[in-house]
Amino acid sequence: MSALPTPPAVTARTYWTPSTDGTPLRLRWYTRDGSAPGSAVVHLHGGGMVAGSTDLYDPLVRTYVEWAGVPFLSVDYRLAHEATSGVPALDAFAGLRWLHERAPELGIDPARIAVMGDSAGGGIAAATAILARDTGVPITRQLLIYPMLDDRTLVPDPHLATQPTIFSYDFNFTAWRAVLKDELGTGSVLAIAAPARNENFAGLAPAYIEVGELDIFRDEDVDYARRLWAAGVSTELHVHPGLPHAFDVLLIGDEAGERHKAERIRVLRAL
Image (cartoon, rainbow, N blue to C red; front, side, top):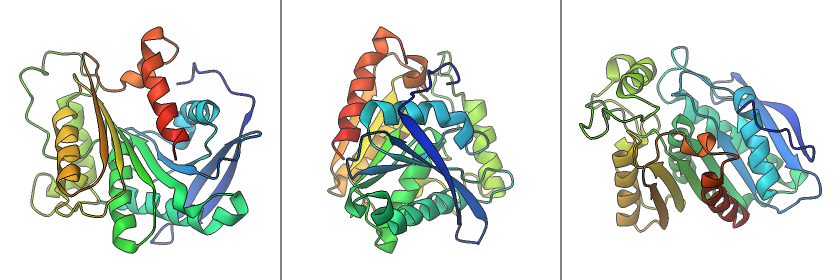
């Protein structure tokens, strides 16, 4: 990501807001000069909920804002081991509430705010959509990019175990263990920690889901889309053949990545 160029027209401002337990959270608000679409995205970075930050993802978020002209709010949620189960989603939801409260000042239509994330951030975005539904906070869409949704994806698929999946089964176990500790794989895991544990999909925001065919999250992501459809939630699903985890970042600047870039721009501008 650090190799991405810095778009000169994209600027960022830092804000702070308390999370649900009063812990200060850093927020970074990105806008492109001359663009005021009225929509906005709350963005959650990847990193297995054990790594990553708004700083690490700064070049990628700036790139999205430059491409689509849609402002982004990046939430620097807390990470495991220090953060307990569900805390990342509660932090993300605090960022969403902050954006709703500041919407008039920032020129945002509260009915046109989406949540978005990749990998762990995609799972947190899905959990935030559940919290938003349950508390009556409107969001227009959930954009889930190869989301990390299910703590039970621990037994290697023999067809994927020998493939360059980028995010391995060992890494997945390590990350979920750090997040859930002794609750890993038990019936105590909350939907806001692992959204695949959700039992009620009715009324969730429409979804856009992307995943690579060689991603260990493929089956859980496809199943999540199926469960959304079964609840009457409009969902657009893309399974990209021959591609691993983080394919979009790996292909930025490459001709093979132009189709994925165009899809993201289409969805973001449609907000």
